[in-house]
Image (cartoon, rainbow, N blue to C red):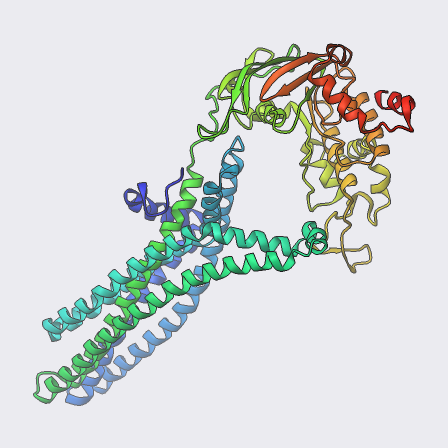
Amino acid sequence: MLPAPGTGRAGRMRLPRYAAAVALAARSAPAVFTGHVLLTLAAGALPVAGAWLTKLALDGLTDGGASTAALVGLAAGLAGVGVVTAVTGHVNQYLRAQLDRAIGLLTQARLSTAVNGFVGLERFESPAFLDRLRLAQYASSTGPGQAVNGILGLVQSALTVTGFLGSLFVLSPTMTALVLLAGVPALVAELLLSRQRVRLHWDMGPTERREVFYSQLLSTVEAAKEVRLFGIGAFLQGRMLTDRRTVNAANAHLDRREALVQSGLALLAALVSGGGVVWAVLAARSGHLSVGDIAIFIAAVAGVQAALTAVAGHVAGCHEALMLFEHYLDIVGCAPDLPVAAAPAPLPALRQGVEFRDVWFRYSDEHPWVLRGVSFRLRHGESLALVGLNGSGKSTLVKLLCRFYDPTRGTILWDGVDLRDADPAQLRTRIGAAFQDYMAYDMTAAENIGLGDLDAFDDTGRIQGAAARAGIHRKLSTLPRQYDTLLSRRFPTLSEDGEAATGVVLSGGQWQRLALARAFLRDERDLMVLDEPASGLDAQAEAEIQEALRAHRRGRTSLLISHRLGSVREADVIVVLAGGQVVERGSHTGLMAACGEYARLFTLQASGYRTAESGPAVEEAVHR
């Protein structure tokens, strides 16, 4: 369970979070960061310098003791402060934008590296982790830069406050204390409000993700057919808007609270400022203050209040940014989801086989057992089929074999090497796979196939050979740009004459053939895993693919999962699962003769092809 922000180690991590944000900014663009810091510090001192030059110029004019040269010098100084202030602001704004971009690039690279480094699937199947990942992605682009700018803004405002408070203290220690005390409630209030804002981000995370989910259903081609056929658009829209109203109501409630608090604080500041001006006028009338003193007093009161407000805003913004940044730090600093040996055991090329030895598995202590003491052996050069009803544990066995999860109990051995002791990356280079829930990448046809083996990503011959074996080469060759055709309408593309064009969308069966071509590109791997590789194809296409797969499996080590039992009958070994246990194993002939679970399922499935009119001929064709 992941803790909510602001709890757990958050309080103890305050200094490291500030340090991590500043260090990250300095590392992303050292020269830009240095320039930004120097200009920010200069911007904090310039208002105070301008106020003192104004006081000296006014006093020199009113008492008549200053020379013309001195007055000209003061005027030139004021002009210089104005020029530097104007230029500094624009240059610093440019540096800040450059720094934000550099920070965003670095944090995004580190976050994607960390996520890509997760060995298994458990975290991607956790709603709490997905919420944290969403906040980390948001924080990676805005959090560190916002935090650094908040820290620098805080330093800038502190310089301004210090300079003006020193000026006020010279004129009136009492008014200095009143002005300072009036800013404390604003600081406390902004901190509390920022904490509530971050809490709101966390609490509303699941609702916002649901809203995005419904929005995607209403706007993607994958869902468009069912949405229109079933007439569920208004229903989904209602749910989307309900979630949006929930988020809006929560934000509006906090906005009202912020408006009330900030209005009250602004009123307090105005009263203190107004009272200070009255005091200054009366003091000047009695001769205790000069015209210049009044000018610097008014400038100092306004400057202190503005700077204190800025301090409160910077502290609150920095606090909020750092609390969100903690999600980023948590993801980047995440412990491995699966243990990886410091010195992994070498994983030899498969020569003996893969063995499941008393494997038990469940997704957590709160979940039921998916596998219960599963044991079987897949020998080198052998084809083994897993058969069973939905939920019997077939796909879970594949996840364990690819080491997306580790067994809760028991071991999986690759030529005698426990998969826990091997490097998962090395293991996966030895496995080729075609999954039922294959990916359709919004990329070109060649790229979709080439992703199966990056070593062959630009090898046209191998890519086209894999496509031919999967029965998709002819289709791809007829596309507008053949293998370079974009298989998506999500992104714009250009035709050969430079005109805007839309990509091509394949049918479900064609996509499945493409996914199979991606698997065939890894044909030199030690083990091929085929999870319902022909489930989305028509009868003729399925027959063609099954023939291609039979040719591919001949003499190779392969693991096949299929609900169509006619496609697994030629496997060397068939393992039947039920309730997470192995209930039968053997060849098709042996299992049919045993009249057990396999025979029951095969006969039940085959009976769907029989009719009173078709008789033995159809039954014989089915069994062939």
